[in-house]
Image 1: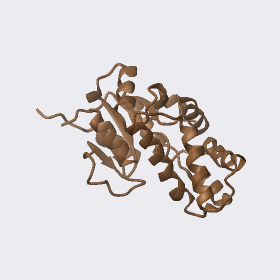
Image 2: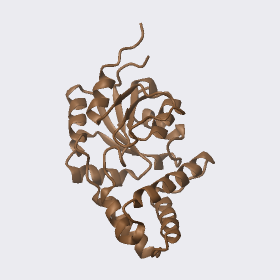
Image 3: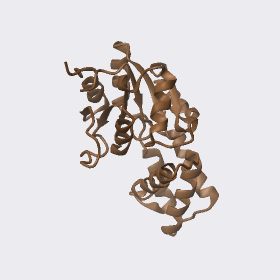
Length: 228
C-alpha cells in the first residue's frame, strides 16, 4: 500500500484550470457548445500517439494542427489566424475553486507541491501567477524537458529526479484517468479527482486516492497508511 507522499505533482489543464475560456472561443469559431469535446480529445490523441511512438511535438504545435483539423471538418474558418485566436484562450484559463484549498492543505502539512504538464512550464507559471496561487507551488515542470508527453514514464520519472525524491514518495494528482495510469505505471502514488470524468475507467490501474474535489483527493493522500 502507498505511503503518504512527500511531494505532490498536479496536472495543469482541466485539473487546476478550466477550459471554459477556450470553450467560449471555440463556440465563437463555429464549433458549437461542445467545441471542447469535439477538439480536445483529438488533441490529446495526437500528442499521446506521438509519445507512444517515441516522437515529440510541443503542446502548441499539436494544438494548432489538431484544432485546424477540427475546424476544417466542421466547415469553419481553419486559417492560422482563426486557430491562433482560439489558442489565445489558454492564457485566460480560470482556476477551479477547489485548487487553493488543496494547495493550502498541502502547504500546512509541509508537503511539497509542483505542477507537471504536457504544456510548457512558462505557460503553467503564467496561469499560476494569474490565479494568485503561484506562491503555493514550488515549481512548474514540463514534458518538454524530456521531449515525450505523459503518459510515457519519462516525464513522471524526470519530475521525481528533479525534486530528488523516489517515485514511491511522489504523488500525481489529475482528473484524467490516462494520466493516473501513466503515473502509476512509473511507480508514483496517484490521486484521481472525479470532477471531470465522474467514473474511473476499469481499464486502468486503480488510483491510491480518489475524491470529488482536489481537496478531497489530497486529504485522502495525506491519510494513506503503508502496509505493515
